[in-house]
Image (tube, rainbow, N blue to C red; front, side, top):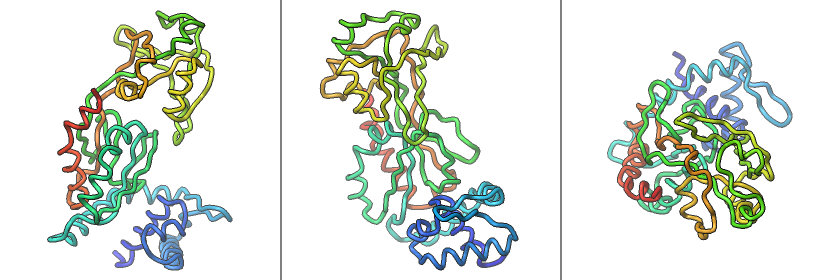
Length: 305
């Protein structure tokens, strides 16, 4: 193997993750010319362009996608292996990239951010809030947090929070105007406050539980929001039926004003898991984060109740 190939592939992966040469240079802490030169050398060696260049951005080519998918796991394994040797006798340090859904950030990361940063001042956290499911290896993340433990091969999942339900709530003024729905069929005469995922750019479907089976319900929408605080404001003002995870509802400052409806049909969500590549535990900064959250398991579970 060409001794320069590892460095070229590292730069290629940074460009793919960041979406541009300049952003990759900032992430790697090297100059833009060096990044451009490395990419050009790799493309020359392969005989194929890895990105299509426009005036505004780089778009990865089919060849680039193939290289990215086939080399991501190997590159990350090599990086962790080298890092584990370099860190011998040192304190945990370096970048730590985490992708997390909005709810999981509020429940799991936000309460402990300051404590973690004070405990490990040499670790540089990068947190990306993303409601969609992404390939953390391909995107260059060390950790992900999401519902469920069904993962790709080579990944490890550790439970952070037990299952809970998504509740439906209305205000007193809404009940006075529209009445109380009792069955899924009644919802055709009511109004939903829809939620749009910002990063995934899709509407969260209304899924109920009927006799142990999922039931997707279409109903009139009064307003669409992309933030849980907006959801709460719209519910308070009687604009429609709001949906909140039970732990989120319990922490609203005026939770008693949110009247639960159709509770027998509330859907249960699976447990929340921290997931990461199996070989990543070789790196001290990764082990430090895993152990840190494990030591706060009871406090994380308490947030749920």
